[in-house]
Length: 298
Ligand code: NAD
Image 1 (cartoon, rainbow, N blue to C red):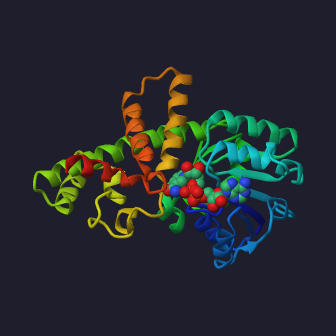
Image 2: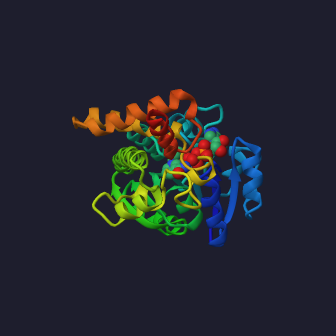
Image 3: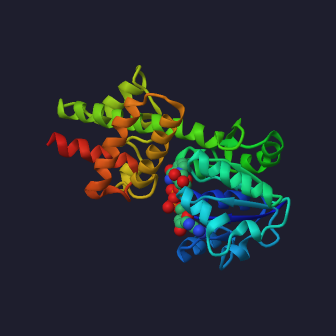
């Protein structure tokens, strides 16, 4: 069993760190928000008071932050860059969803410090983080992937090697752009059904058994009252913030430019989520986009 430092204990990081404790590791944790550190201490993690303290004696460092700028700041450009504090040979696994260029630059700098850095963004949502069934999408060398795989399997069910550094983030950007399209389409279709007098529960079951079936409908129904234990059942609190989906759609638009790929559906979804964000819903779960269709339909 290893000593693992876990930095970023939000909606995703908190339950991921808890699963590493259950697997028998010593898990030292830090977050800028003291409440998040206290919550993690309640699941058996060892609370630390700073990022520099948390990496002491750690063989593996895992980060789960919101953005590329936060990741750069933590490891390289902030007042106390963590890459300068870690012992050579440390495995650094960044699970945040960020742009591929930042992931590649961070990996290069890590190599210069004698560290092994991989990008390992996840899919599966908060429920997947809690259940330990996340999908990890890794960018890095074969050796680095082999080193990280066992620990990733303790937090997830599927662990993919997408390619070299940055490839994990590229694959994740493709996935989340499609997720945005599917969620927007699911909200749109269910709202049309409701406005036509259909019961959203019955309609959801019909589509789940038909050709419109998709992940949002199966596991993340956006209509309040249809499904338990999803953000729609608790006022769209928790889950995956609209702000984060907008960040991911910006990353996807950059990737479309860099790869010369037309993304009209992704661009339409981006416009919808941006409108929803500026209307004041940025901190709610992304399935709250349904509210936009309801307001439009009433
Ligand atoms: P969150 O905002 O709930 O958590 C992020 C945490 O990082 C916060 O608690 C924040 O205080 C902490 N943090 C930021 N900078 C820090 C620093 N320098 N040092 C220590 N702590 C710091 O976000 P989340 O929902 O957990 O998402 C995290 C990442 O995972 C994002 O990149 C997101 O896009 C991605 N993601 C989220 C979901 C989801 O369903 N929420 C699913 C897949 C991927």
